[in-house]
Image (cartoon, rainbow, N blue to C red; front, side):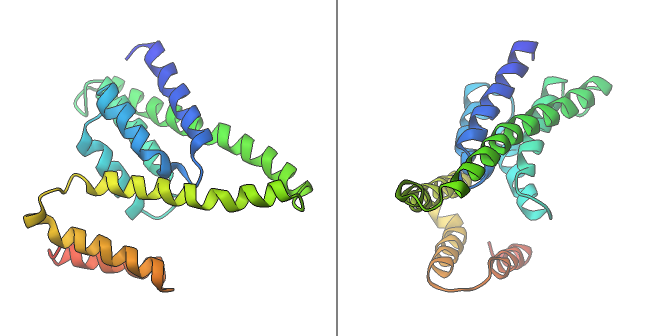
Amino acid sequence: MNATAWIDLFAHFALLSLLAIGGAITTAPDMHRYLVHQNGWITDVQFTSSIALSQAAPGPNVLFVALLGWHVGLNAGGGANGGWLAWALALLGVLVTMVAILLPSSVLSYAASRWAHRHRERLSVRAFKAGMAPIVIALLMATGWLLISAHNDAARDWPLWLLMATSTALVWRTRIHLLVLIASGALLGALGLV
């Protein structure tokens, strides 16, 4: 990767930062398109494993962006056997993607929340807040679809689809805590049932 590619990576993630309503995970489909299909900087397996690992690890889910940057840099340096340059580029990838995804949205959120708090009684502010809920839900559904679409063999992967449908229904219709659902899915996976 040359300097222009790194600048393009930063600019793309900075733009996605401003579109990440509901969290960075809602922009995962476009990250996938940009990193895997358009530029070929990482593989599909690296992409999905980055999201899975960051969701399983404690801490904020935005850490998947750091893992994506890590893979971009490591691949640019020739992989894990690329020596010190590969590891340095992996750290550069983490820095570039994390600063790009965090800085613009943080500045915008700070400025917008101060303004919205001062004008919280306006009808337009209340309408905007109410209108954002369906957008966030749709973006999360698109991310979920991207992650599960790799499992398209219905005869083999029906337990995954059943788990997804059951989890969706439980989240929608009950007050079961999400950690219970995540733990249940992990247990089913550990037992080899999904």
